[in-house]
Length: 138
Image (cartoon, rainbow, N blue to C red):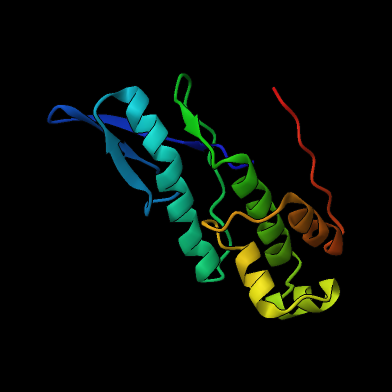
């Protein structure tokens, strides 16, 4: 769901990483492996701008054959999934807080991609929106 195609471009001895779907996410690395590792943080930062602005998340386009994709960490994917469900349903943070019996700062932390929320809190928010968290190891 949140696997975004990356463009890797050699750039004066480094590798530049850009995302067509998330233009705010730009990074680089000394080589392709480092660039892809740094791309996770850049993507999370870029997507956090959408969350902070309360905008819908950009949809990930289909990668071209052989094109690599990057996705946020598992915890951030769960948070982003709950955030997107909230946006899709037209639910405001205050309504989610009411449904959960939480104070607004708790909801704000839930959607802060830099905050290490507990999975049970993310799961409770998903349930309050009629959604479920599914975890799998591939």
